[in-house]
Length: 337
Image (tube, rainbow, N blue to C red):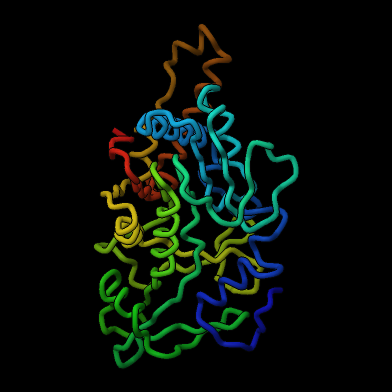
């Protein structure tokens, strides 16, 4: 259990913050995120190989600086950053300073080249990569009442909800701009302002390079009418209960994040689905030619397994639907062709 008491009413942002990151919170558990849900990083080493290719393209765009940073936001137990270091060409790896940003303690046995931090390093040059980070930045939820007024949703530790005060100030402005709610009782929205601010701060940590956010996402033209707040436990979706027993997540308004990041980066962002981003990085999912099965059967089996993993990473209706937000900082926006 976390420090939240079961009878206390509070907004979802405060409740999720304590349940996920407080003492005894979900993300401080020893099994890490991989014990509860499967990300692209866990699905296949091909994902880390693609990110390593992207880091090499950033390196070229930066004219191969003496020190090249790779910053893995919400690093879990270091799976992605470790995979990227393994996949890099030796010359690039020798110049790469790898950072894992995570609130949990450094796991035993992690590569000594990886620096473990609770906040991103500042004014570095290279690639900042945030895979499924923003969906776990806690936010408040609004729901339209019977009078057509958006009100803050309050929650107790057992998951019981009720409506609180009307949404006002900067949060009301955010809703009006990025998630306008019709005056229809029961409609809900997740107020993404904390994520916009978190993303803008992450982008501003780069002196030059590229910031990438990868997440379940939606845009202004297709916001879900009842929001996306949910929980995950032991590989299954479950009710979001802010008691530290499950992950609490909601899809990301990546277009709003992009606008806020642009204010820091002074560059044009790009939004595209994961399937397109990975294909541009050489992850195609094409089956190997059948002729290889008779001439090199072991190679055929390996290539077939790799094609299956690539297909999972790029599949419509699955991981391929993740959104990628690319925010260049002081370099050209031609990294994915």
